[in-house]
Image 1 (tube, rainbow, N blue to C red):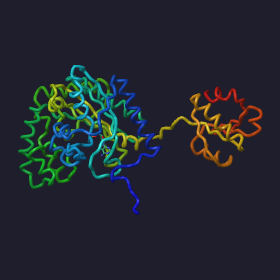
Image 2 (cartoon, helix red, strand yellow):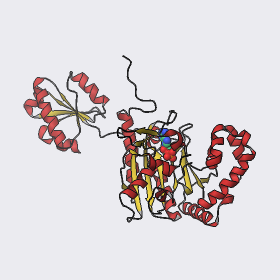
Image 3 (cartoon, rainbow, N blue to C red):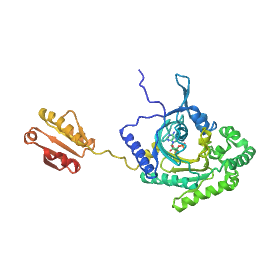
Image 4 (cartoon, helix red, strand yellow):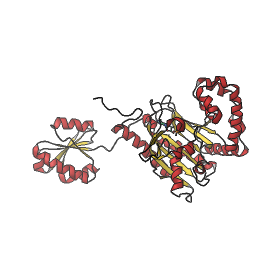
Length: 412
Ligand code: AMP
């Protein structure tokens, strides 16, 4: 019978990978608490409307990446491709609209039907934050500062850069969309097939196309900055001033648009030089119309999401669990006593690993392999005297300890 493999683009997180992923999530949560955010968990499945109404039909996610299926009741269900739309849906359906400003943190798996490669999976993990109810640039600046602190404290390989742009308010975007479309029409024959389909409904997406022909066309395109109205320009100035005040380095990337309908004004992305082509590690922006697009009261918002899988690939060091103590009995009688001793140590909060079987050599090898801090060796002589031998695996030194003093000794 053919062996069953995991689905393409999904992977088993073996213990070491799991440790890395949880470490990144735990750091994100700690930083979120530092900034006054609280955790929320929304379902991994949502009605399809949650994403269609918010991300927009022309976004890559909705048009070609959603895991969409009918359940047995005939409802159209999506495995969430991102976190913001679900949090916004929860904000409305849980009646949180009176609790502004609201600061929420989430983490968990997301699902996108993408072409898998290093750092890109069909099930991947994100941490993210949403700040609802604040329409001032200060909120955008605070979230970017938080992202920078999070990435900085993780101790990652390579360098991180912050790309910043504004896509303006709806009025500025409408003006720009017309100018851009007008220009692109003149060079239509040079555009890729994908870009031709975007030309009518979402020409801004062409700006961040990876196609070489598109890039040449985009190089001469009119800039979005020139289409900004006063309000949009003032907002972006506010964000830039705030970042400068905090000494946060950034560069303005006029081609950054982020491709989802719900964004307005600020968009940003942190990239790395350590991962090859999948270089985005965190992205976000402002979304003042998202809540109202989903049927809630008009509520401004800003947020970001970060790819935990990618960050875990970039950690300089693998985080370690608390090193356990290995209990090593010699002989049948000691074997029984070791079960009791193990139980006592664990009850006292000391992590213990047991080898279950094998001679001393085999068990000591296992103790080494799992990174035990010491081996507590128990033979018939030790039993008779009420003592144990403790071998510290780091230094190789061994000492004799009374059973009654063991817990105290291992706690220090
Ligand atoms: P996005 O929601 O597309 O802005 O994604 C936010 C972050 O999630 C990105 O910067 C990536 O780090 C990560 N990410 C997005 N898609 C994937 C994927 N298919 N596999 C792994 N990480 C991803």
